Image (tube, rainbow, N blue to C red; front, side):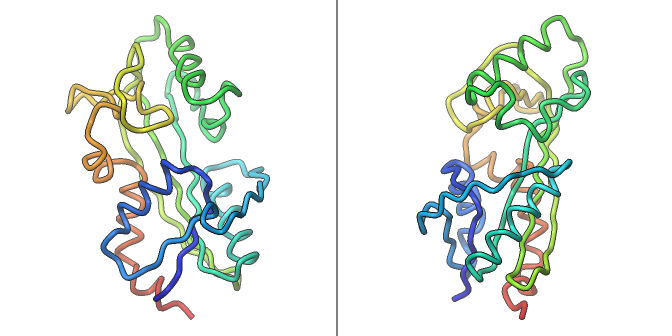
Length: 196
């Protein structure tokens, strides 16, 4: 059975990726599983560049096919912020990040936003494949919901009249930015697994 290393320590992200890969004949291993706490400097200027940096680093280090995801929230009215700085936007974790965005959006009419996920699969020889998914929504006016993580509690989905943190995880795993990127990846799964 082929092994796929997920270059992440984020338990929520690992769980999402494992759930989406659930039915495939691939053994999923995370950095957590192998106790690798290496902190790679993500100094790219885009989600794709940061995902590529992580994927190549760990593929080479562990001689294993590696999946890295860089994702975040892009808000139109904030000139694309928090963008590639999504995870560390406030410097104080998810709740503080959400509060910062809500404060910056006070009184703003254009609340359009989207999540983006850039996924790269890298091989030990330096070759790679890249996939991208986008999830459109709006910035709500308060935090709502117990599911999800990151900015899910302020990301409002008008078609469901709920935030991304209020919808069931099973639904989110079908419609999210990461789900869309992974769905494109799964179309190439045979080629990915059988890559020499």
